[in-house]
Image 1 (cartoon, rainbow, N blue to C red):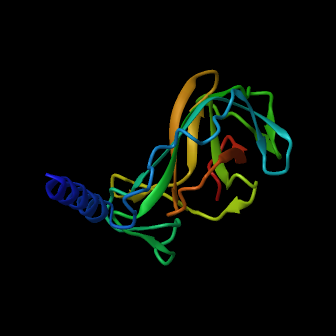
Image 2 (image 1 turned 180 degrees about the vertical axis):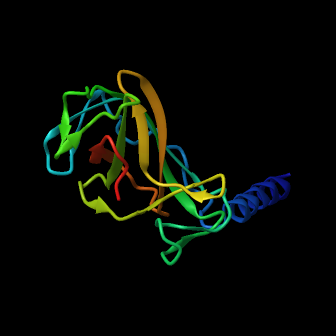
Length: 186
């Protein structure tokens, strides 16, 4: 009976190892230990406060499910492969910019009542050291996706950001605004 139990445990560990490919049997893929984000206005990378209000941000670990994908807007950058480990942030924000707000020299809101917004996420371990991860852009239809999102003024809207990393020691993260404008970046 003990031999059967050991065999069962051993084969279970083997199955877990084969299923995950890059993980060990002791790896915890839950993101429950990552410190949550509280609702607040997001800041620009410069530290100035934006008018993009973060309502929620749910982190998770997973694996890239799309076919091999270039990780930039051009076709010559690094590639993330199907099955590679990723860190995902599912978020909801509200765009509080108005027609009177400026983003540089142009309005922050276009005639359709939308703002074009780009984000970055900074990942940290428990010692507050930065964790390097490349942002991945899922394909949308036949176009390569990006991290530029169009948010209607005053509405709560969801979005997802993906990061290629095998690091499973993320303690906390920070979402920052890179770009806000009435037009997408050039």
